[in-house]
Length: 237
Image (cartoon, rainbow, N blue to C red):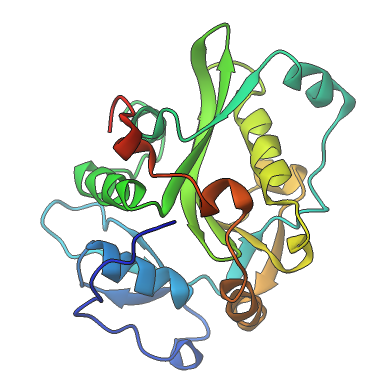
């Protein structure tokens, strides 16, 4: 089970009072585990401002990207491709974050502070990776936070065609249980690529209403009993 960290010294206020026209709702705070968990429980997530030394930005999108668990679009070719990969969970969390944060990727935003913060959450049992392996090598994957019935996806990458999509398929399979109708798979913002996979946009108020319901659910069985990957000696953590 995840370990609850000390509470945050910061407050994020009532989401009902956030600017209804602006995705950016807060600036500052820190990236301690308690602060991050409080933020996600309020519907926020952090991103660096892009300037070294500047405070952290916190977003709660006016239009939130979510993937309905029964809405993932799996083409016949993707289903065939998935047979070539092995899905693993939490065996290479640090490597997944590093691949997602590769500075050669366009529009990269994962810096050293973000990496360290999510590795701490991983060690506490909150942050997880779903990985697609090909012939014994990490070919793609994604990472994010699991809090009750919420999985907040942070980033994904691929080194082989379809590898990130296969990891997403593995995540959706993991989340499909007796609580699937109320689980919430958050992808922050929709993009044309994500929309092609079934991601839809919902208004902030709808997202926050679904979030409250999701947070009351138990974790998926896979993460309710496992120890954090770093505690089990995960390389790269």
